[in-house]
Length: 267
Image (cartoon, rainbow, N blue to C red; front, top):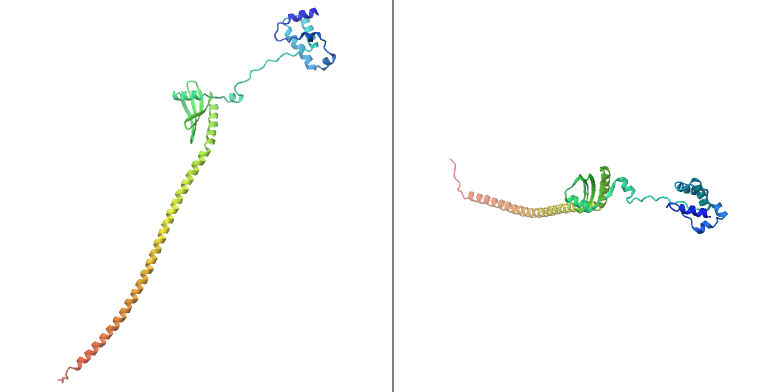
């Protein structure tokens, strides 16, 4: 027992060795618990402990220590944790990161950005900008001329993919405005056609009214002319009768006048 305590004090230095509690060390392991231990645990514990103790203890001592640790059911050493990525793997794989909008605005004010691609749809616009000094590409989405979102990349292919993504987003956002513009244009076209049709209908109505008035005037004129013709015809008949009467009277007077001429003998 004393030898075992001395060995434990010597091995207390390494931080990765799990120290067994005093109560557990003095208490024997029940046979049932020893039988229930899995073969994997029994095989891994001695190898881990023996590898940890090989640098500071003799081989025979390490073997005795590992066997004692297995007999006491020592815990397995804790594995080293891997660091968690702060940037999603999908974003890092594409090579695109979220850009600071204030930085993009400042670079734009300093005229340090060169436009490579520009897309505009109503109030939304997308620009692929190149910062030559840092060899960095910026993809900016604007709404009513104000910067909304920005991405940056060091690869042109990744920047173009982000540009097409913003382009599709701007197109979807402006679908309603596109439909509104189409409907406004169609309504204006229909209004013009309605006004043109109404004007043409008014002209046709005026033509019909004028034609009807002309026809009415013509009918009235024909009726008046026929009436005048009838009157004139009656006057002609009366005049012709009066003329015939005058001719008869003149002939009668001529006959009467000839009777008054004396009878002269002929030579």
